[in-house]
Length: 300
Length: 300
Image 1 (cartoon, rainbow over the protein chains, first blue to last red):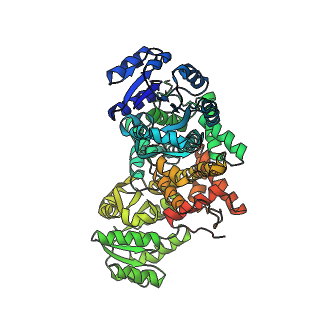
Image 2: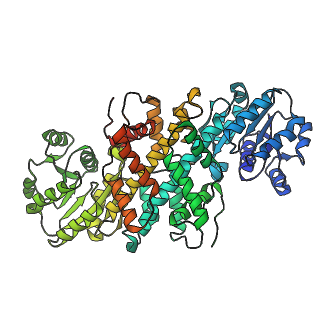
């Protein structure tokens, strides 16, 4: 089976890499010529325009583009290339309500649309991603072997109807907001609290905590890596971006009457950090986001 | 080297078990006769009163009793058994300021007092604990082989001067409060949010997240176990205890001018849960605390 991948940024390239490694034939498109050339260099093929997919006999398209209008634009440009029974997977961080709407519209043309939340960050390229899929189960079964190639063993599945994949990914990111902030507050208090003058070795604390403590986690392993490099964070600013998912999680909490206090406060702290430059804790959050997602950190 | 263990509850028994397994000779005391008998059955010796330690030629005492006045009482009762150069380790959840005070007082008698935060919960018995030690480095070196026997490989260390061990453990627990609440809010929103009617399989979500996602962690593995057993939590109340460490973390944050917003939120939510019976999220927190720490859950 051939897969058309649209969007060859950090995440799209990593998907392509994993599919190619699993023997799946990949044809990619990106507006950026360098990204296209790179795909050829790792064993993929490319098209120069989305409309060129029409000649490629491709029936599965995997989108990895920024959420919002761009997804609709890509789907529109793809339409001439689509046949009944084709499958579109949106692997980006789209709003689940948008995904449900897109699935309904494409169903009118007998095109299946699967929403697929993707977690794992830049290290997923080698280790595999965590994939949360929503949508039609027949369409899912048809592409499950591709999902499997992209994912960590046991790190994938169809979680529910259309929208469920992006909904679960939204909640995942909401939780992520709060986890990052929770660790960051703790390390801030280790550094600037009562033992400030003792200069506790925060790398050693993270290392010890990662071995046998209740709070051990992958995020804490990344904290350990960061602390190994530097514990002062003097060279960077503490502003942290919020890209949508956290805000949507809070909106959904309000809509459903489910309190999401910690997630909401993490979001507020990010807004505050953008206005003020943040503090030691938000610097650590920014560094963690950089570690796992390659997100930018503002140098001072 | 012989070790006297005082307090043979869940955690004290687990310490004794690990020391005995490592070939360390253990003499234990607990007010409860059954706990003493149990220690004998796993290869330890016991005394019937703390003052009986005087005949036992023991120079290292490990306390595993509830924090507060009880620790002082035990130390007082131990005094006739202590000689210059002896070492007392407090492995409980004592307030770090109390530990610093105790160390100062015992130093007048040339007794070393080490504060040792212990994490890992009831599973530490088999897997080993995470041990965070503060105090005099010579005393630490003298007992490091015992620490090593109790701990997970790489999960132990001297982190700073007197008080640092319990301080780091306090912050650990503060972080733990927020992590538990963060996951709980997320699962609450998965269950009672927009996909309520789809009844998302929360065990499957946790399982997938545990494989390759950014938020994978030991706590999330426990969520998965809980969801495997039941996802409705109808039989239990959602009141969650707060045993001190969370409150101290917040106090220290205020004292040092370090914002610990999420930890403070989690503490408030626990107080609220005690007044109201809580919600789905706090039920999950209660079940998690039960899983890792054996803490009670209120049946309805």
